[in-house]
Image 1: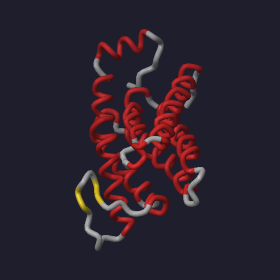
Image 2: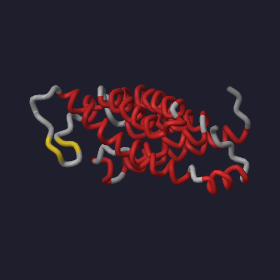
Image 3: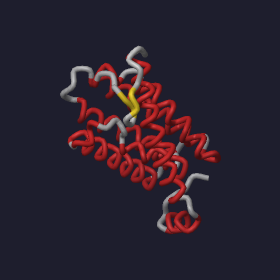
Image 4: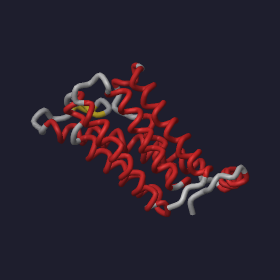
Length: 184
């Protein structure tokens, strides 16, 4: 895998966008919502390829490092959040010919990885989008269900819509005319 200066610039842009979205959400009232707005960017790996895979991974590391600095268990989010993004983004890229399937699989991967530890940081969620979860379930199961549901919304719905909108031939041609590489 060889990156030229345009690939590196695209990687930096996505890393910056992802990390800023994580930090702004972490500093705002939206921090109480487990729906990570920055995850809307992850499906764009199907369009732009490996630079975005690494961009959303680096951006996750930077954003999680900044927002988790004051949390005693934040080290889990700093270590495993970027790994979840790397795995999900890679799978979405590998399924770029079946974009919706890739987005769903990526959402499930993030839900499983992040949901398995996030309860240690923030405690168990009591509901998912207003639907009460059974208190008899183990805490980590409730957490995985909650994160998976929010990841499905962020990645497989909103992110997929964004990907579909940007994948229109007229937009692809405009991107190519500006020198951007589009994944085949």
